[in-house]
Length: 289
Image 1 (tube, rainbow, N blue to C red):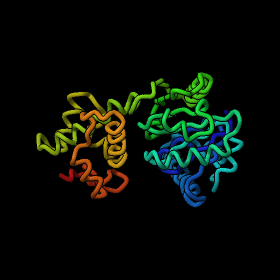
Image 2 (cartoon, rainbow, N blue to C red):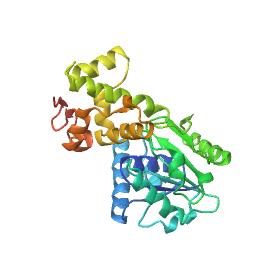
Image 3 (cartoon, rainbow, N blue to C red):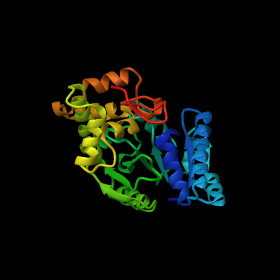
Image 4 (cartoon, one colour):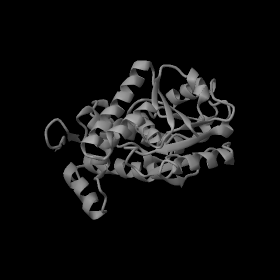
């Protein structure tokens, strides 16, 4: 695979594009319009500037990496892509519209992949032109740093598709976890119920934000507490995933914590909005409850 298309120029999409370009592949990056795609490339340029400032990358290498990323305003050029990766928001209806549109230009031997973190692959494959060439390819945030990719074949995914995508993921210097197409796959099936339960513990006043996070950092040897991690992921994304688990399985253990719903309704989505379980507007994060 030499030519990769990435749909979605947000935090995940730009991280995926940066990582792929760092390994010598050409990347076409798009979003709802060319301006957003160009803004995505600019955010990659800023991220590389920070790495240069810390001596993590040479200027010439950063320049070559950026040259491999081309912002695109529509899907037509994706006909030349060996792999199209959807990295849009975790809303199934939006993803399905993307698959239908991208499917119209999907090359005869190309693969269409979703970076979904929870939505069933088999179901979404019905919106692609060839379910045998549709697969889940779940990167973790921040993509350039995190060493894991989940590969999730759907019921109709061909073994050749799984093999090619697995080799592609390993070629990015990542470890691969192969998951069956079950809600939440492996990591989020374990992580999101933990985050959701931490919010229940907070909402029931069992402990405060800092004590919940401290308890998990020190008692479970986690690098981040669950509420701190939720802010990093985005509370809206956490809610979307836990809702997918609940609506797909109808298991009450995945019922969203009411306080999580309230925070999302308030627009307190975590780091990206400056406020979630912590307030990030000052020099040091401060609990909001």
